Image 1 (cartoon, rainbow, N blue to C red):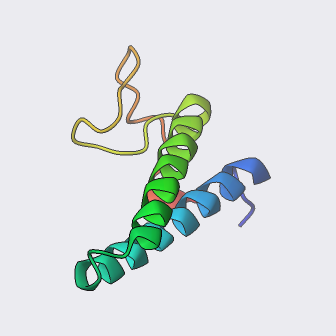
Image 2 (image 1 turned 120 degrees about the horizontal axis):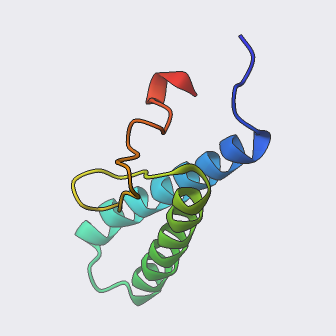
Length: 87
């Protein structure tokens, strides 16, 4: 099976996954170390980076997050994005 999407598509998805993994780990750490200012700064930095990457993804490939977290263009374009098992 060949990849139906350009390499940049997969690179951007991988960046999003990596940053969101960092955010998940920092969240768990901050749950037990809520006064760690450096970790909070790292969390805020990566949170901003995650939003920027997701915005970039959506501008190039369509909506990424459901339930009001991503806008849709007209016509409804959720059907146009690949399903998780397609990438």
